[in-house]
View 1 (cartoon, rainbow, N blue to C red):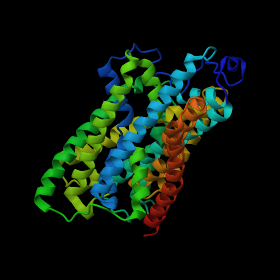
View 2 (tube, helix red, strand yellow):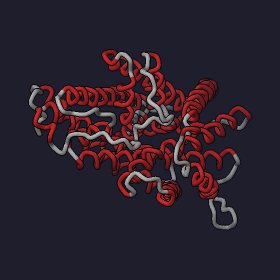
View 3 (spheres, rainbow, N blue to C red):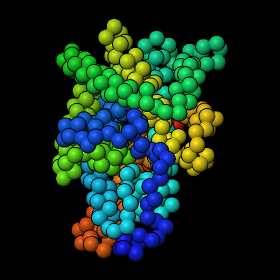
View 4 (cartoon, helix red, strand yellow):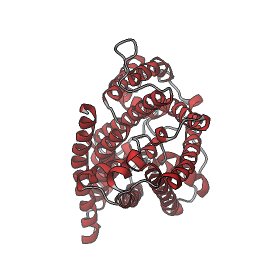
Length: 426
């Protein structure tokens, strides 16, 4: 596909609609340009989430050295692919006739037409819905643990504790997800990250105390069979590529955006690595899929776990907003549709009931849709736009990332599904 001036009259040229999209600010008005510090904070908020709580369990399966190497490698590759998207957009916007490209979906449409938009939209829907499934699993498993409910104990003769808590959330989520505008819920995203950081701090302190007391047996390297499983969780933990274009647009000093993004990714990598290693060092083979459930009983432990449940409960409708934007745009001509939102919430809840393990589901989502969004599509779009300018090394790098992304998506998805079905049958 050529990207010359004649392309301005083709159907692939982006026409920016006036209707809200997945990148539309929650507060309803365009924010001022961000300083380097604010850009750093925004990148941190966009990436850090509940996935970090599954890292110690992943390190238990992969070994702490192997897990660390995978984590830092995925962080570097994710940063590189984020910058591929930024460079691709800058190239297209420098060509005469191309409109403003505001989001990942816009870029897909500009490069590949309606198929590109559909591919990105589909992956975003699956990824965002997958995040929300993991939220429900976390909330249900944590409440069952804190309230001392055994996993095999039936309530009312037929409901497991996990099912009870998921269905208890359901009517409230119907109400929250029925709100057409999320203006009043937007500050809760900041609250969620504050609680996440607080929980990580408490858990890391508890980890150090537990390690000094117990000194469990540790493994540096796990078997090859868990390699792709670990990669999937690592990819999930760094998933935030859908926000990189809006964040770069809001940066005041765009020439320094790459440096700020790189520093933030390095900081998050060290934070993730320390959290995963300390969690595994503290509990060894007893490390659970949600590390907070390893904390002993006590007021602080319970407050941390309840706080995480509350923040994920209110983050759920925020994370579902891009899903509603896509499905309402495609099925209802961008009109608000209450019944469609309720069907989506019901579907997400049913999926959460079927998945037994939090970390296993993180690996599944990370291996499948997050690999496609994070690696395959950025490399493909970059190649299609720059193919006439790429040298041999550039071509090899783009193709290597594309092949790597596809390989990880296939093998990691298979490995994660095996883990899920093994956990379910045991």
